[in-house]
Image (cartoon, rainbow, N blue to C red; front, side, top):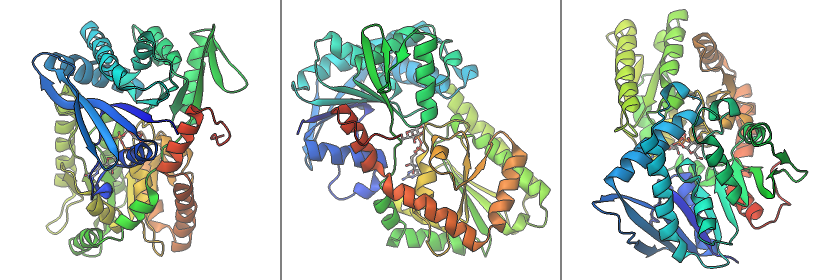
Length: 463
Ligand code: GDG
């Protein structure tokens, strides 16, 4: 079996005891690394005055990690710049928030070269190389330029935007052409794959052959759909753990019989938090008799706090949640508990299980794992209802959720009423269908699907 080299912006450190405390992606990639042997390479999260390319290695639990420090300027231009101020908003259809700075593009290119220079000597000739996400799109090209001949794959965790949006990026052609350095490129959904193919046909004047490969001149890349899953069995167990029961009891005790509606999201404009609060406000306004029977717990740990738009969204949500609470709260009830901190995974599982409804309403999301975790955490005898945005990648698989348009406050208000009134038999029927899918197509299935394609085994490909 070939060794695996995983390359991503950040690296998950393997922990002996607590696989349950890591995100699903980390668990899956660490288990694939254990199975294949190999290395996980990325940025250490630290900065240094002058870039040296010195590699920090850790070995443990069957996995080797290798990380490098970057310069402060790299952080500004590559990570906070091109990755999070240019590509992230553009890929989430937010051209209004997209910043086009030449320095950012320069920093992005420089860091991708630095990654290539430092990881290249770590790669053996028959390793499988798997690059992750929008931070590192040109890395494959850089590695090929340095003579890499290995099987090389790329997976995008965000949406792929329509060509009309992508062409607003000054160097869009170069960016997309660099994807042809990979053997396999993976997306979460058919929609994102279609947008990529449309770009290839309309802008690059390429074709799509009968194997689904995008072809431009003599270059070809196998473009596939591989929807990421969660570690379903682990999360189902987490929701039955002592910590989860404790969190669930804590929620019940503090709610005196009211139904909990939960939202859990990184504080990010793509997650539709503002629109969600407005939808919930509309529900409160339209349903005076139901108001005091529910409350919304919105957990929103801050992310990318050094980027201005993230500071703005934080103060916007502070003001909005304060206004709604001021308007509707009573002496013994506040409609929104808005919390800017994270919780351990098992507690989170208990909170999901306590919730009668989850509101997962991103304006645009590559997949969205919270939707899947919520379903996995439910009590099979009395499952809650998932309200899910049609614009989350997860909606393509989770058709039994109550699907909503997150831009419509009325639609969201109606969905909350529908979820509150949904009879047990219907809740169970919808939940059973979704949990079956989550058990079948979990994160290990996803990893296998991608690696099979990368190894040239096309038999198990997602339709
Ligand atoms: C990107 C794509 C795609 C959140 N709060 C807490 C906490 N979380 C965990 C959740 C979940 C993860 O963070 C968030 O995953 P998402 O999928 O919702 O979103 P992104 O971070 O934007 O991820 C996305 C994903 O990559 C994978 O491909 O699905 O579309 O944008 O696991 O549980 N975890 C803990 N405490 C918290 O308070 N422990």
